[in-house]
Length: 487
Image (cartoon, rainbow, N blue to C red; front, side):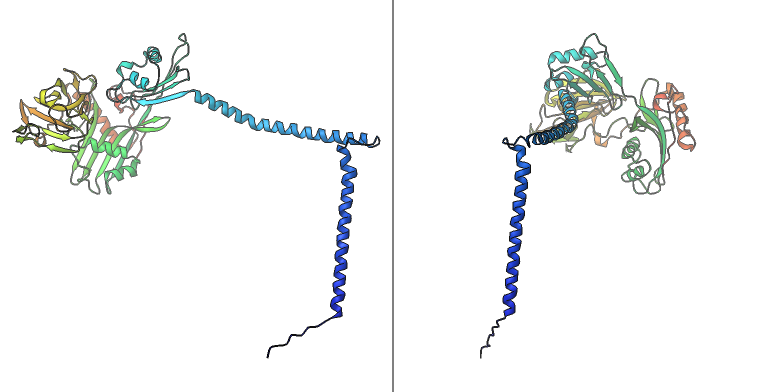
């Protein structure tokens, strides 16, 4: 059966409900009374301040109150304006400074092979008249006609196109800052950033590789590369280094304010169980020739580079009988073809004299260089020659003489390189490379003096001599050196 629901009626319940209802009514009446009270205050106290229809008794009081309020508002507004002006002023100054900075335009660049500063600045939008004017003004410091390849420059000019500053960097060391006056009557202001040099000593031991050991003792991968280049013909540092090998070096440390770069390695020793002992002495003879020699005065480098360029691969080897790719006939190919992109720099493999630079039938643009001991090298199919190259010119090993191309009879860009000994073409890849020249006998006494000083400083753990820098081998004047030892 469904459950019954029971309902109860209580008198007590009706009585409490009436009490709550009366209480709510009192609260509502109280709220209305308070609202009326506030309305009255607003009407009688505040409204008269803004009402034009005020009685004569209340008018003076209202004016005083209004004037007080207006004065306070004005004072606050004045303070606010002052604070705003104070905050805006620096912003205005910054904006003016930025505007002034924007008025000066800066151009940075460097000269590549075949470039001229005139053409480079014309491309940047500088007028020819302004460039010629600049050239005339700075000719006592910089000759625009003879700027070396790789020279860097920075030029500043105003919106009118007038040059105001010219910074010239002909090499990694020298920097000339030239302020250009607006008037021809004013003198140029030229400043040159000075490089300070000291000589330091490092010694280390091979644990895993020369690179890691040099990082540990000198924090310099550059020195590892320098040492590897110095002993490149004696040591293969990739395969012949062994744990426990030791090295000792004297090197120039250069500063431009703070540390700038490492200079020349003046002397070095490398000794290993498998490699015996190798010594390098940097010597600059009175004629200006600089090279690394062993203790007997023999050059550490070979007379020729291993290759005249950085190439991709050898596309054709030296051969007595080869099918010509264009003529389709069998004939000798007494040269090496190095495949490389057009424009790749080509260097002379050794010191010598240019005996021909011009067009040579199937070889296209062609260069021939005579070297000591009856060697002659040839460089064919070039896209162009180095600027200023001419017959009779002396060139140094590694100097850029031209650029890879495909002129003449060529199927693609490559260098046709040949070498002759006593007038007969020989296979360069099988040639036993001759050693470079030893110290000139006229300067052997100076060499021995420099060698003894460098080796004494290299082996001595005491203070360094004050006369062992490269630029002071003859003058005996070195500004400052200090000793620094690594592991």
